[in-house]
Image 1 (cartoon, one colour):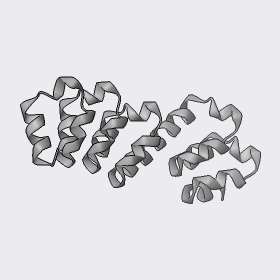
Image 2 (cartoon, helix red, strand yellow):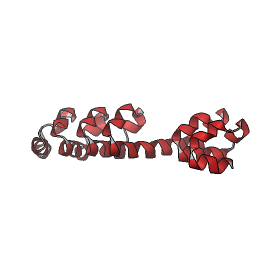
Image 3 (cartoon, rainbow, N blue to C red):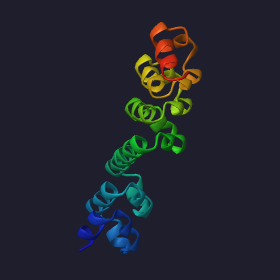
Image 4 (cartoon, rainbow, N blue to C red):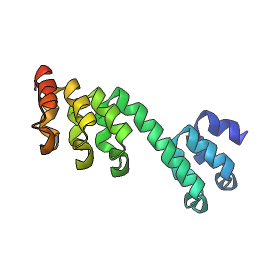
Length: 146
């Protein structure tokens, strides 16, 4: 019953007895269903490598889906997630101006910056200096109102 409940909604883990919260397979299923379930796993499992990896994967999946709908979801993401190229690329394709939340390394990434300025030319101001003189980047930005 516990496995079915957490499969449908991982948050229900918090409503289950502590011995169930300490069950690794139940915890993994709950986290897979909803990354927020991590807060309800036993303290012992919170330090388990598999559980941490599952939480990270679940967080990444949820954020990737969020930024595709609202690029500004990148703003509240962890630094680790803001440095994830695939997440940033999806975010700037949805809203170019969120390039501002990307780390310098990704603001130097030509493909990321091109995606951002193609979505919103004004995103050019957030690009790394090394790309602000790139003819193609500038032309794309101007074409999109930058």
